[in-house]
Amino acid sequence: MLLSATGLTAGRRCTTHHIAREELRAQSRLVVGGRIVCDGDLVTCGEVTSGIDLGIWQIERFLGPDTALFAEEVLEYQRRGTVNTA
Image (cartoon, rainbow, N blue to C red; front, side, top):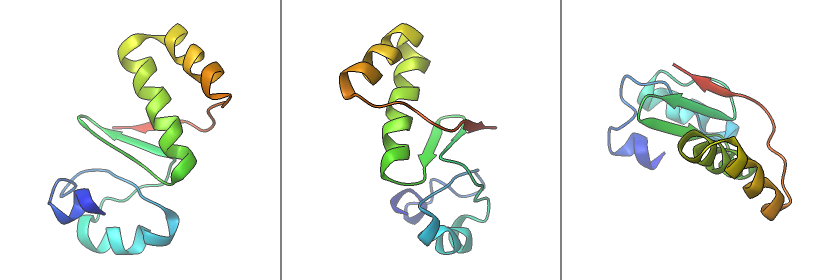
């Protein structure tokens, strides 16, 4: 919602917590489903645990799958779902 309030989501695919999707849709109009939505340099997620998924996905994106698996082990957390990319 903060990204939307600043205009950063205007005309871009994004997501947020399911409770706030209609409010975001009124501001951004391109709200899509998914735990993580990547629209180029704009990456949004839906709720608390999808934020952890987003962090691990970014680790994998920039540092590789081995580092992402190590992060999962350290956090004792397993990612779920897929990343919705443009």
